[in-house]
Image (cartoon, rainbow, N blue to C red):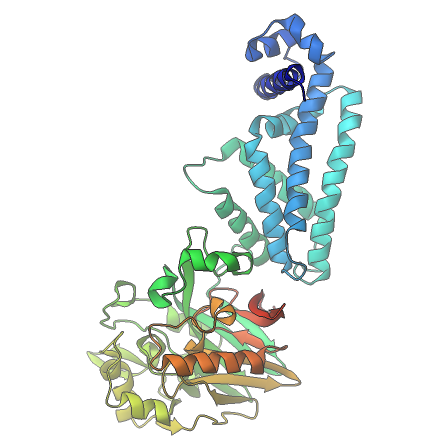
Length: 487
């Protein structure tokens, strides 16, 4: 490009920027070429060297506004791996749409505010570009629906219009100092796929067995505190599948402490009992809590008197808290009619040890149930019902167990703390500071991936919503594909 051509291109760009701003502020009908020339700091006559009319100026402003957004969203889709989830595809598209929309705010605002005012010839020209971009979104949403990520009865045309309307209006209210574009995109997808209701309760159906997750504590942490190698830099290569569920925009990670309620053969089983209320704990978020956990259990059909079995995958502080409750100054069993199942090897280890993360847990959450004669020490292959049994997964603690559910040809497994975070499927060698036997834990994680890296539904005991998913192998590498719960 010659110097004169370069200068001409810069002048055209300057005029277009001025036109976009002026059209946005004054509207097409009220704007004159003189207004645009003044905004561009040039003579009105000079505009005609570059644009023959106000209509042509508007046409190019509208074109630029939509062409750049279209190209950006299309590029975002082409850069994704073929097997990413529908939610990740839509998250990528929403993120790209917002970035280009807000980068060219005057152009996109002019599109939104002025399209109904433009002459017919401009309208007819631009409607083709709008249709092409709408077709791209139709394809993205249709694929998501075909994969089951969007309900079959959702009107995709209505969804597309509602989504575009909401995203486009961000040019009117977005403040970069208040939140990031990425955070907005994540919230949009969170609401689109999971609604705006409370995620504290989730359900899955495995054959004839139902599994319900009830949350006691949700918190955001620096994962490197727990898994030293999981620094923001080391997590970055896995962001495409960790986000939006398992990695936040500020590089912290959401961590859930929850129980699983299993209904099998008329037996109600509670797996791990979280933090508990009124417990003195060193961690501020766990200390002297007052949560609605028991009422949440009642809501899902597991009132404390109706629970038949309580199973602890291991005896760390955040897995035994609701074993007991405070009544008139004494710790009493929370589930008075239940048999508490604890691994024999696990108890023999902790019988003479203290939990470094909660030394008080033994005295307030374990000893009282033993003294109440409600504990049964079990082997690491114990069968609870015909559909539910424990399997040994040692390393995090010597007697750590996971819970395998098999019914009607379907299978799920509750991990316990063998995996604290989904990134450990990709990096099973990343050690957890709470692992008592780090080398054993790593071997067990690798064996677990081989044993259950098929169609088994993985239920992570500390995985943030949606909590469930499957192990996927791509090019010899493993990752965790999140899955929504069944209705």
